[in-house]
Length: 355
Image (cartoon, rainbow, N blue to C red; front, side, top):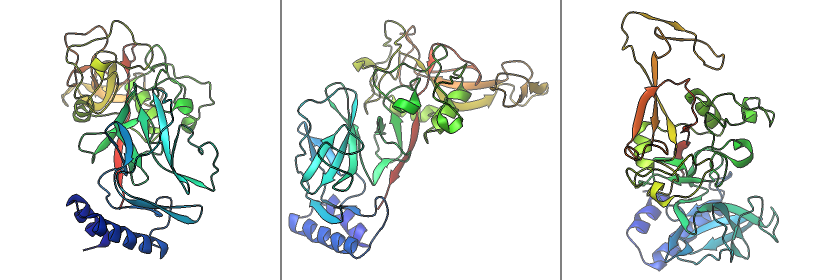
């Protein structure tokens, strides 16, 4: 059995502090002898199936023992250490957790915390602070995180092993704010997003529509994708069935009735959200042909003749549909080139877990 497997087994079995300390000492020795170079190779913890941090008793704490190299020196922490957070926490804000030789530091600055430099601090994790509460499912570290490059503004599915979802609906300036930000203009058919730099955007160029095609393209620029029906029903679970907002929400915001168990906001009764599915409405019958539909000038679609040959999924229902909204609410009557003021999008990505 490998050392890491021993660590996992003993951690899950709630071993004594002495055994845990011995295992951590072994991991430290392995690390100092060159085990695992790279961005996260010099960060080692006694359990890999959970993040190194947790919320317990309303406080941010270490969830397990871990070691990390900061400025060429090894820093170690034990389990259940209370981590001091800023006196005033700002709602809808992402916070980074830094390791320093003075202790763990929490800051909303993702470059380095105040009073430190890149040489004497190391960002090893983070979390999102919602509506005066920690988003527990948003906690991540270097080896337990979303697979996309930027982990901010995301929460993990309940199993903590499959996928992460954006907390907020996509906004119109994702290059500036990321795809998931609080109090931002929601991207939809009337307020289309700016084109990401990855796709040749210049900072001002804006899409003319917000179709399923465009939503897919924008999210792909950040290593994310649209959820399928099963993923959406999981990320939206816990919202109040039948609830709808009083009107077009316009911006990303908090609504306890439209909040899911894992902390995603506005999942139902605010905006329809594009799904990833497409299908042939003609079921392969004769009469198929090339359709010159709005693919943003990227080719034609060969399907049932007409402008409704291909269907696309959308989920959650919008502000005017209180009777049908919910985590399993879905619509299948639009096409992937359709664009409307009531259809927004939310990104998801796979989970990354390293030994």
